[in-house]
Amino acid sequence: IFVSIGSNVERERHIRAAVAALRAHYGALQLSSVYESEAVGFKGDPFLNLVAAFDAVERPEQINATLHAIEAEWGRVRGDSRFASRTLDIDILLYDDQIIEQVGLRLPREEITRHAFVLQPLAEIAGERRHPISGERFADLWAAWEGAQQRLWKIPFEFPPPLLPPHSDSQKVR
Image (cartoon, rainbow, N blue to C red; front, side, top):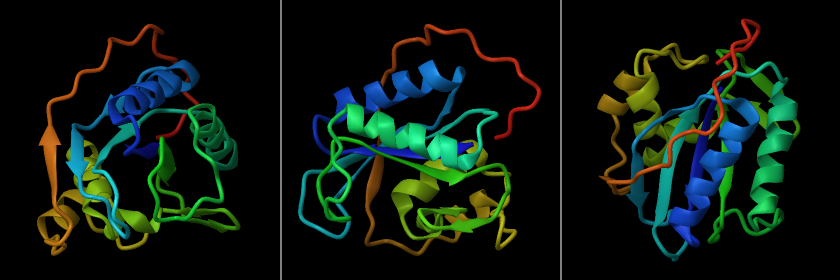
């Protein structure tokens, strides 16, 4: 499973909270670098963004519900404008290589090919993986990126070490 994580309200606190909550729910995470970017679609404070990968046995709908619960726990109010400041935004990008189209969940998430703050960190940790629809490698999609208006830059960011041992269930997907 690959998820994007973003915040532009008490950014460092909420990014660390999201990573800690994901570790508590799913165990070991693979994390991209953290990137700072200007708000896209509205005037607001800059965002911090990253991508996390983990293995899970839950269905995508269950994972989505868990992500929404984490967001709510940290002050996210659903129904706010799509283009607004937020404490925490966590979205499933990929569930293995499945293509899912249902109300409230479309995978792979369209933002992968629309926003540099999603594609660059995804390409960093999953560059050799292929987009389930186009078949293109994420590294190639990033190399061909033409979204120069979407500026972002890698920043130094430290996470505390994980407290939970990784799960070792062979039924999990990424």
